[in-house]
Length: 170
Image 1 (cartoon, rainbow, N blue to C red):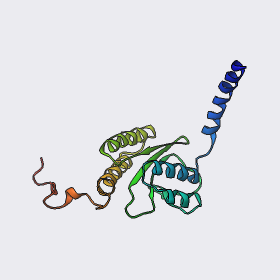
Image 2 (cartoon, one colour):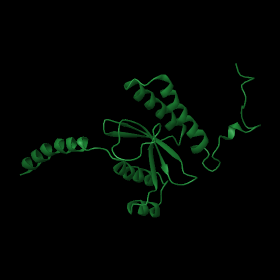
Image 3 (cartoon, rainbow, N blue to C red):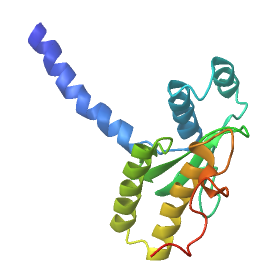
């Protein structure tokens, strides 16, 4: 009996994985997954999750260059955040019906995300200007939104706090 059960589990498991990989990734599915992710990161509370489940949009997901936000999700890089003025922002890479969340709320996350963006852009042979645009967006969002979310600006750019001009630089 145990061998039969083990055999059935081993037989069905690969079919289940194939079924998951063959499903189209939609914005609705993606928004639900991202809402769960944000809840786990304590960026969303139970009230926001409840609103999301009722169809009241709380998670915004859109393509970076063409503002795609409906229908089928295609390979590329997307931004997502909550619908609030003090919300942190994130990015994700969609590649072959799978996605990777780029958590740029920490410096370590930013470093890893830059590496993943470079790998993705190399894989799909993106032009250097597109690649540098993506990397620049990660850096700007990290410093201007995520590092100091209450300020919504890079405090190092204020006079007297950091280096603000290039005259003294090599």
